[in-house]
Length: 494
Ligand SMILES: *Cc1c(COP(=O)(O)O)cnc(C)c1O
Image: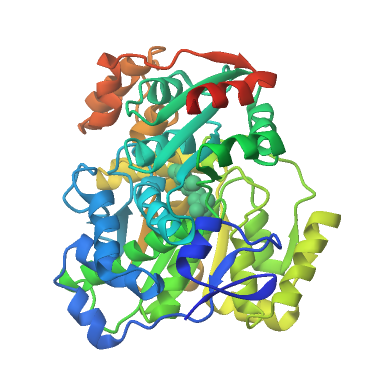
């Protein structure tokens, strides 16, 4: 097995794919074939711990990593960093649905599962491809990804991380999460401007020749932590394999019987990881792709037409407010039988006309495995409320979208297959929109009072990483003009 690009035939190793992040032709790195988990191997995984399962699954893709290197990465990522000995526990709702809780990590959202291990995968990869270089991660963030990346890279040897956020463009809680970040290799800086200014600034710096020369002199190299890196996709495959093993271990299904998977979807990374698990041999029947009011993926899966020429809505499930789902390119590549030329054509149409459509044959293939639906703001609130009343289970706004869409799928199809629903964020992360769904009282203006109120009303506990922000010292106070981002970077890197 090796890695190739979705837009051109290549032959690179896992370390090269991870160190490079994106292919030079603009395509995404994909495995040349899916490593197989045999029935025998699946049976062996059932009694194992999450970390053991992670080592087994990741090893099948990391073709130029030694077993010791894989173990080093997995231990670094998942030892003492999650509030549950199981980083991705399953909670049975009792109606055939099981919540796969992916928010027990340091930032209380599912991106932690990948961003806790990416720094290790990246440094081991870089050691093979560019020895003796320090990796410098640059992030422009509208809130959540910045903190998850900081938490992952803090104090990881061989790395430095610099995060820029818009001074007035993140919530007070998100700001506090970032500005209190400890670690001797981290820098956090506000900019006078909006998220686009931050992102444009970072892109410019990536391509700046003087900055490149400066880095070279200091034996440093820029890299990015964004969600198209295969190093973020691979760890997400693990929790679907693990969820299947838990269903078997808990006696919910027999080995070999299928499960369904429902995912609240934005960039299409999380649900694609579930497809990869199926291609490797995990028995999965249907993938249910759930969107909010930005329902471009629902339309695509129902009609085969992907059209981004439409209004953009800001919703209470902001991590799914996306009109270009980058990871969809990988799905297209597999649906078109690994034909890079076809994919390159579709992507050209997308960047030109903002639109493409797939062939009837590909649409049929897509619909055989994928079902899709969307959920508006009102239904999101109603779902949080209903789930809490009926099951005493508190979920966040993103997860609620998937719960509702899966509910409708079952009503339409009568499908009784046991289902795993990806629960992507702690309800406390979106407390201002969760609290009103379960309680009529006034919403406290102070962020910490809000968390305490939600805890009291729901009889659950505030996650420690959020509660402890109250007493943490603000360490990063710098705010610069957007023209001065490069200067800030140079000063930090020395
Ligand atoms: C990022 C995110 C999503 C969307 O996941 P994709 O992999 O981009 O589809 C859903 N929910 C939450 C809470 C997220 O942070």
